[in-house]
Image: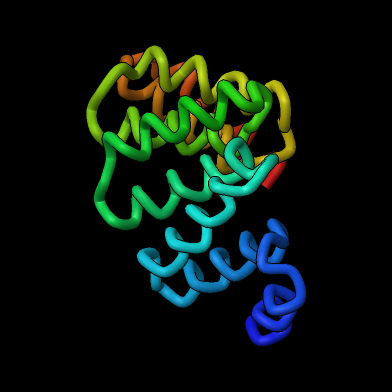
Length: 149
């Protein structure tokens, strides 16, 4: 697949989908730095700036750049306020860094509202609730995760 996407870039070096896919392939191979380079190329293209933010945030997290990831995730949500993947990553980031659990809860709730079939979103909500001592609600969220997962 990687070779096919690289060939498509020989035909059209500005093909956003091919650049995104090559970045994703590199991420899966554990090469976050190279993935980031593909995503930065996407960001430079017309229509690519908003699309690239979540992907750049994911690579920033893998490279240990939490502040950069947070900013990119906020930008991704400014571009698309219904982007549950970005919301989920941001909620997780807030919890992982010991920051505002209430913000994480709000983001996680939005995720579960928009995509109630995703168990990961329910588990992140449960974690945000647990951090705040809302054990009964957290238990319900875990049960919901088990039901849908």
